[in-house]
Length: 124
Image (tube, rainbow, N blue to C red):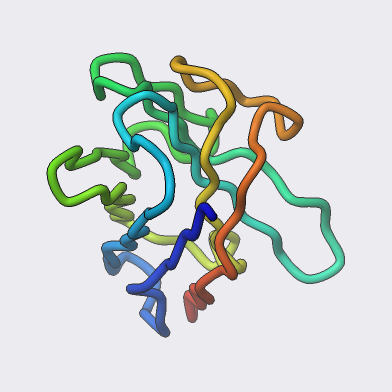
């Protein structure tokens, strides 16, 4: 059974940083892309970033490009999201997900297992 456990969320002032982690188990980690999504209150879940199985191919949402960095450690079966220069509009529950494919995609439908989410709150 695939399990994903996020951590690292919290309350931070605008301009600050957080490093989110997602530990995976139950699947050959390096065979699949991983993604980060987020959902703010009253809004739909939106794509943030995705990384291929090897880590060489990365995709970002335009809203986070240049501020967030996704990475993975296939030995530790963990994917990370380094969030810098945070803005109040980044406030959301952040979810990691494992894809059914090797290369990352923005499509919500390509991800079959999801973590429970970690709250990121950015104060102005």
